[in-house]
Image 1 (cartoon, rainbow, N blue to C red):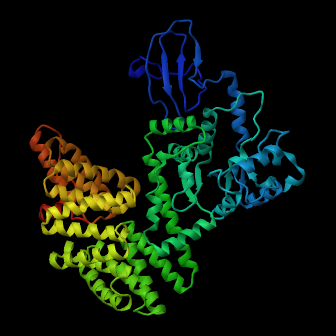
Image 2 (image 1 turned 30 degrees about the vertical axis):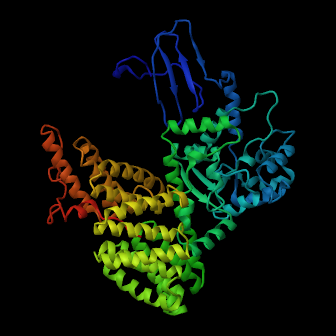
Length: 635
């Protein structure tokens, strides 16, 4: 790169090779006295910044930042990287543990101390020590190969945790496991390896291997997501476009299955706890360095999204395995859990399929009036409500509620759930406000008394009742209840919990209906950012909030261009997912394009018809204001 040259002369044959670490700012001074080039370089992101300054003609060297290493050390570093290239096949991992005389209950520091003593003379990594040692180690030499998976884990985990997690992988996969792969003895003739060595080692190996698998435990707040170096490995995974997956020990899988059967929303406790920006490190300077690198590359949000998506896939994978291997009674229970989780994740067709199958299996094995059968029926009724099938939803919920009152009583949690769903149908979707309000007010009183004021179901009822008040025109009651509900949701469930975000969305819709556009924009924007991280960019509720935010932007002529961009992105995602509000979004986009043309006739703003895209056809702008903006969301 020739700094200061014209575009046509900017690049030419290189005359100087710069040895660098991707985490550092380096200064190049060239003898031709016209180049001064500080830049941050990584193997994935390339040149990030460039400035020019005149320097003296005798200045000719390569300088480093605060962690500068001597240039002659480069060859040693390359050798170090070659030394940490080996992995161990999954099918040989336990044999290596046995031959090294390690105990399954050992944690990372204990394994390190043991390997350190074993390799004290050779100063090699455990795997290289075994590969070159011969003798008793010869039987595992065939398992020591180039790795196919970079294994990310915490040193608090035991070897048993690691081995159980590896059972989820194909036995022929080869894992890069730092305690076995990296030499644990420092050469006293060399200075301690700095942050740049470790970050470069992990980054380059993730890039070379091409896939990261993270071991996670416990199920609710995985420790690996709180450790800075583990988070750095996730950053390296994204930066190098490597694959990513998760694996968990057997006890964590069992814990998840127990939790999901007792509480179908329990998986939200895991995904809403994902906040990698809060990670910590043993060395405070490491945390600062890692945070600086990640922040400079776009922040932690993309990492959180990647982790959440893989966690959801793991949840589904575990439940599907149980459905395949269980008897009919257990299979129906796991189908119900899978269907409920799909409903919560906005995958309504999958939810309907699984819940209908679970209902038939439970009818066949338990009978139509069994509490578990009625519970599945109630969830199916709720799924129909989210699919805008109010007729089917109400029919199922009315029948189910009557039976639950007879079998379980009016104060049972399942009965309260069904009454809440039926009340929301009446008050929000069918405009039977009096029936809806009466049923939801009764539900709220029972839930507070039986479950407690901060129980998740109590908060859901509060949201539905506030939405009913808003729909029926009781603005003061709606606002008061919304604000109380959001405060309790944030305190009890967390700011990123889907129930919290649902209530925020409805409050934003309420503010817009009251023409409080500033308040609506603020809450929609916050909700959109968090939903994108927690639920994903293509989730049903994320797209609804995205559409709502665009409609608020349309109230300000200066934000029409932002609205247009938002609608275009939203429409593309809705079309890809066959979202129910695709037509509404298309209408808003067309209106926005027309208004932009009217405000700036000479601007190159075209409607979809002018761009040759499919027009909406009959119906014009659709229904009234409520239809165009999207209705509030009950639960």
